[in-house]
Length: 409
Image (cartoon, rainbow, N blue to C red; front, side, top):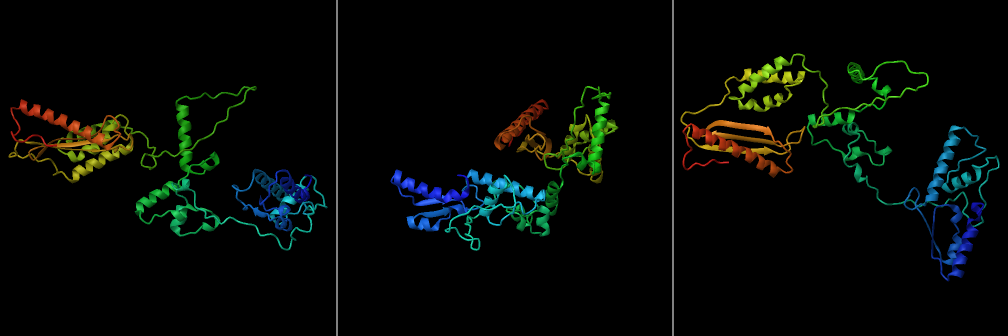
């Protein structure tokens, strides 16, 4: 087929060939919205139903049509940016006319570009055929349900639905969150990572980070500066910018090491000794003891905060009653995957001798528990071992529990 003007004759001959060769009757013809397929008089005489596909629907349009649409977009782009005279290639309004213009005018543009001539059954330009558009109800894709976008615009009441098919801000609500939680979520959405050096150099925080990185490479003697040989080419390097976040989503601060760790260790040792009569300090003090080898300034500030708390409530301590009976009572519990850094569970128990608290523990478990039940059994095991040790201790002191009072877990 040399031109699209031959489409109708070929289609009529093809239908006649089907009826003659296979003794079958064509009932339905499905095509795109091109005017070359519009032969209403022929279709009505043969009782054929002509169906057209929906525009902008890749599921119904063929590969050829999509490729042809790509050619049209390229042609419009060239005409727009090269400022070609409209006499060489005019851009018609209808979809079918655009197809005719590109197919006949792209190869050799000239002033006499014309569309193919169809017979008298083609509709005139004054009464174009209405294009069938899909009426299917469109829903936002499910894979975008976990993303939160345009949260600032949503909170300010701005409406951007007119320019977007599926604005996620229409499906996000912060009405049931607290002010601090909303501020935290907004910080996650607004803080962005620069992609290039020109973007990062505009912010002082990224400039300081790059200076520290260069200083660390120089102090570690990662490279040696030398002249480039004339027959060699330097290998390019690219900065990669990433925001380090903690497991809870907050930004990890990059404070320096404490210049005098001895004072921190001395203070922490005194606080550890104080936990023997102040169990309310155990968790905070034991947490700080994990950073005793390389403490930072924030750790020292936290130790001073504990010291201020002790100074503000000096009267709090454990009371040991002299009239308490000798009966062991233990309480055990576990917090499954409580540690945000290692996801290990935390074992906790406390043991009373009568009404006096004599033993307690809150510590991360050695292994990761795959269920809350497993974490509970590990906590019970530790509590049972502690009770057994206390039994031996009371036996060495020639003391025994009440006959009718077994240890209660």
